[in-house]
Image (cartoon, rainbow, N blue to C red; front, side):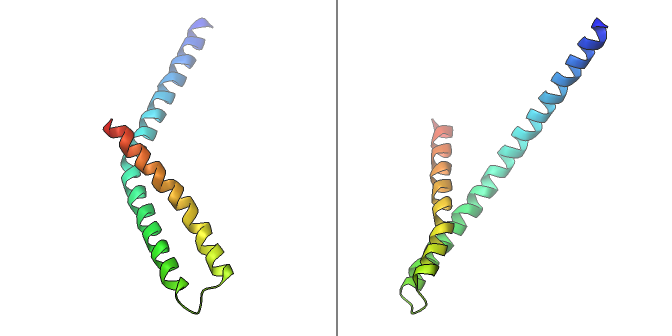
Length: 89
């Protein structure tokens, strides 16, 4: 019985180590692509906001819609900056 508990514990530890390794590999590969995509989306939305604010199509509903998309991307941008700075230090 003790050997079966030890082997079960060993299997769980091996499984969790391989899961952690897979997640860290995926995270390190995927961070750059997601960072670039989110910064591009932020630039496009900020540009659209500036261009549309000068047109006759600008209204309160459009402003709120764009702000709802821009604010999370700004938070993400600051997160990316903090992450990149922490990697350098």
